[in-house]
Image 1 (spheres, rainbow, N blue to C red):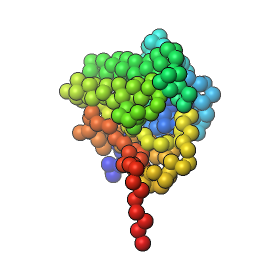
Image 2 (image 1 turned 180 degrees about the vertical axis):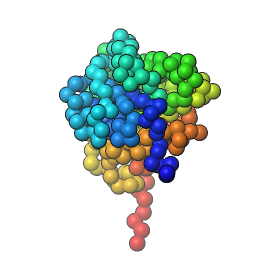
Image 3 (image 1 turned 90 degrees about the horizontal axis):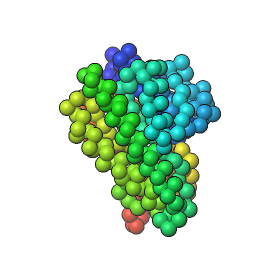
Image 4 (image 1 turned 90 degrees about the vertical axis):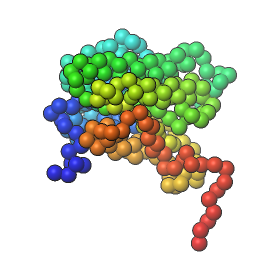
Length: 260
């Protein structure tokens, strides 16, 4: 059998995806159940979760959970729910993030928005990953975690609460990968470019700066996410950030010449 036809081991693997109600998280969660992996779809909005599961190729493998990950109590409730429904989680994807508003620049963002952005992205990401890792380490079982960061982890975005949260996540990936590698737990980051998903509305004019000539969509991220999550396909990959941006990060002020 082809390696690509058996990238996961559904009999022994289960997944938890946050932000699974829309955008990239949704695309990854749907792709996981398509591979036969029992997956917890966690999101803030019940209607989004229901719609995502309804469109999944194998909805019977999808487990819904609704809650606000800005709260530590909600994070613990999610962990308990995952344990009781799918058992030991081996694959964790952290895609949940509060919406970004262009109005929340450095001189306008208020304390609540600042705290919430960090709480959902960084604090929840760390707490969930650590508690899931405890279970894997105790069971001497391998795991694969994937955190969704951003190109703006290293480039200003005029949204300091967002860019600093994503920068923290990028370093968290490295810290956890170094700490847990000896236990067979891999931790990586997926770095989207201009992806029209999850509430982000990109200016179509941005496409002219993207070498592949178009904005991205959530489904562009899912195949790479599965490849990185798979212990069979990427078993020697950890602590890295994989950029999926159509080449946007290659952009500078010089336009490529027209070639005849």
